[in-house]
Amino acid sequence: MKLAVTGKGGVGKTTLSSLLAGVYAAEGKHVIAIDANPDANFAMALGIPAEKAAALVPVAEMKDLIEERTGARPGQSGSYFKINPVVDDIPDRFSLSQGNIKLLVMGTVKEGGGGCLCPESAVIRSLLAHLLVRRSEVVIMDMDAGVEHLGRGTAQFVDAFLVVVEPGQRSVGTARAVQALAKGLGVRHVLVVGSKVRGESDRQFIRGSLPDMEVLGFIDYHPELAYADREGVGAYEAAPHAAEQVQQIKERLEAILAAGKK
Ligand SMILES: Nc1ncnc2c1ncn2[C@@H]1O[C@H](COP(=O)(O)OP(=O)(O)O)[C@@H](O)[C@H]1O
Ligand SMILES: [Mg+2]
Figure 1 (tube, helix red, strand yellow):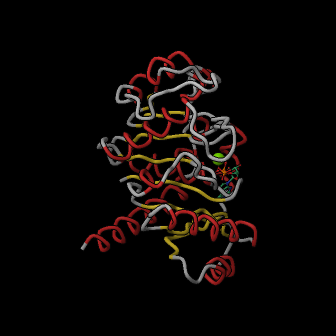
Figure 2: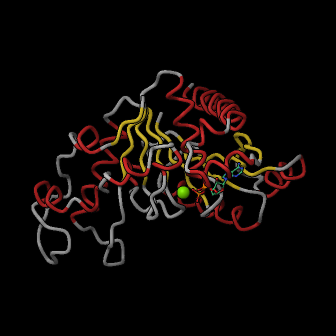
């Protein structure tokens, strides 16, 4: 299972990603959790202690490794470099393990604009392709709405994009934009997960606002999740009711994907 979690900032992407990771890990599955956000905070949501998380170097900042693999140092302009560097060893060497979950932080790529390719993005793109195509683990990517690291060739290997929406116009607008973007990249399943839902009218609002998108399920507004964030506790451990709802979302997702393969 290879999943990308996207949506507007603050809707609950990192929370859903960590709950999903927790649900799969509790089943005994091995999970690779990928933090592909500029403000990386997946570690915290997974309940990884700050001291431990601080030791995690984002892949984009591993200048020596990037130079070794691509032949060019980040920031060196005008140099030739390999666009398909060897990356197979990176997930095991540079991730942080917590139980069945391995966390990898991608970091920010400062591109020169116009979607140009630089050595660090060559490494990140190759790494994502490797994780999506060659690895047997469950992969959960916590992304932002830009999905910048996923090119056409890579995005098609994502089983589903989960777009998190809260009951509000702005996150609904972002969901539509993500759907268009994802479909353009060749992603087959773009599914909505409602979050911070406080009742039936919120569920109706989300369904009614996105009539042409499939709604996988809802996560209620759980005060425990907000508390977990305040206290730096893992979402899965702190909010068993939310975890239960995500378990159902996961089962529904598996059913949809299985039906799609027939
Ligand atoms: N279902 C929910 N109920 C209550 N609080 C939530 C819920 N989902 C997310 N939150 C809280 O909202 C804030 C933003 O969530 P986060 O997952 O970091 O969003 P994103 O990754 O989309 O920016 C956090 O404080 C988080 O604890
Ligand atoms: Mg986030």
